[in-house]
Amino acid sequence: AGPCDLYASGGTPCVAAHSTTRALFSAFTGSLYQVKRGSDGATTNIAPLSAGGVANAAAQDSFCASTTCLITTIFDQTGRGNHLTQAPPGGFNGPEANGFDNLAAADGAPVTLNGQKAYGVFISPGTGYRNDATNGIATRRLSSRATLPRACTRSSTARILTGGCCFDYGNAETSAHDTGNGHMEAIYFGNSRTWGTGSGNGPWIMADLENGLFSGVTTGLNSADQTITSRFVTAVVKGEPGTWAIRGGNAASGSLSTFYSGARPNVAGYNPMHKEGAIILGIGGDNSVGAQGTFYEGVMTSGYPSDATENSVQSNVVAAKYATTSLTSGPAISVGSAVSFRATTACCTTRFIAHTGTAVNTQVVTSSSTSALKLSASWTVVAGLANSACVSFESRDTAGSFIRHFNFALLVNANDGTQQFKEDATFCPKAGLNGQGNSIRAWGYPTRSFRHFNNNLFVASNGGVNTFDAAASYNDDVSWVVGAAFA
Ligand code: AHR
Ligand code: AHR
Image 1 (cartoon, helix red, strand yellow):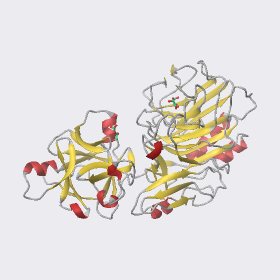
Image 2: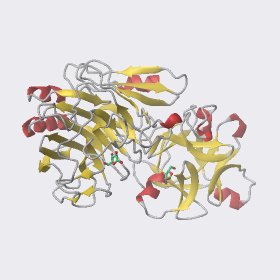
Image 3: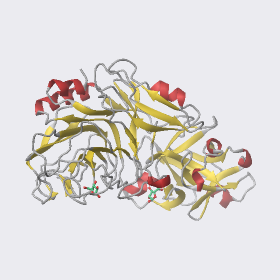
Image 4: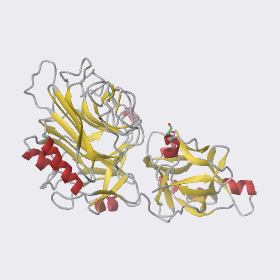
């Protein structure tokens, strides 16, 4: 059985079921998600390899070969049509044209399920999905009574490394604006300390109920809500009139804990609830776009699932055997080596990545260049400051300073030890998009890679609102021959 078969047996059927990694019903053979490629704008749908099975990642890999792909739609597997697509502007604008949010890279979150490759949804700040016109999702207004459907939400997610608002999945406003306390009921997972916290340093599972992330009955600290540090997390938020609960645990082993179960928050506006029934992923109810996280699968149910039903779903998730896999591809860029990066665009094949003060650029470097220029174009490869599965590049002439992105421009800055710096300085090389060398992806922004544009360096996406995101000559501009350092 799949998770939604288990919820149905428990009398609380799924009314939305989203996953890019696997079917959530044992009989499901339809499309899990749609990807769009950069080369020609064509789309394709990715289905499970077999009924109830893992997504056909190989079909995505072949469709997206030698170009970039974005996840355009995460289909609802329940048949209710509650698909998730690019989130529109709301109380806040997203970064794309007309205030829409970014779409996620199709290959931004590779994992394996029982050894089979699949891709999750890496949400960078700015990325978000939404459906404001749903079918069968709980709504509840002041005039309604308890007989209306209730919702629970559940998702398993990767560890979050930043605390911006709000890495959410669940029920939100249909207007994408903050319409007041109690107008949301979504799972939040992350490190935010703006509203609620639990014990330890986070991340925590909390309930985003609008104008507040709740870890229990009060605002602020509810210490029964424990920090979860496992790489994969199962999170449950469920609510019904007068009562709600937070449950969660390690999605790769063990059982769920109950972190809260009891009365509605003791702050005006949250009891009774005013759920509106839109569905969000990766953003706040008002389209706040400051969060980062990874989503693999999530469902919303009708009714208040029993703990026993959720426990059987947790066993199902554990049996799916989520595991990490390599984040890199292409020629090896070995930790401990010293390297140079040569541009491969026809204009510029004698130019190498160098820096002038803090600015990273390309310069023509030859064996007869000054030793200062040679050093400025030479980099020591170290283990990724934020993730040792990737790498960071330390300046050969300025020890302790690394290539990092800031507002998507590359800079050489001293490591200030912050999590933000470490993430901005971590890159995951993959095979060069034009077939030469490597493309050097930003760990926290998998749609973006090292790109030279007017001889200055950025982390650029293949098309987008910034001039340096131009699609023309993208594949060449992001492909670098990584050779021995000059000095
Ligand atoms: O409740 C926390 C956040 O507050 C909501 O997600 C957002 O709509 C508002 O900014
Ligand atoms: O480069 C994008 C972001 O800009 C970085 O992550 C952050 O440091 C800055 O706000």
